[in-house]
Image (cartoon, rainbow, N blue to C red; front, side, top):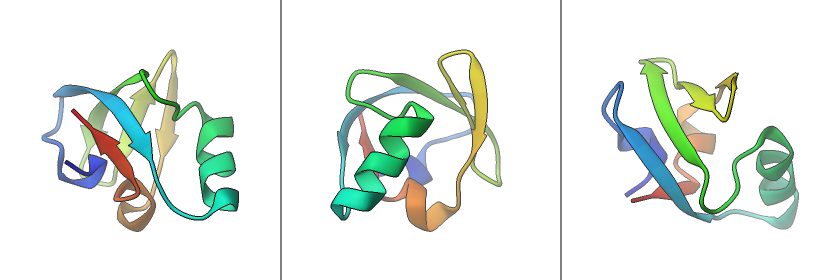
Length: 67
């Protein structure tokens, strides 16, 4: 399922990052890589990635597949 559909507070593991190469590199630099656990902290797609908080737009979050 896309990261943009995850319920708030529900930890999920990234299984695939899609999009163009430049988008994948951008997300990878933010810490969104396969196997990373992310948690949605709010409706504006504020996410906890490792020990940091990252804000993403829903369009960008929809490129990240989680399980």
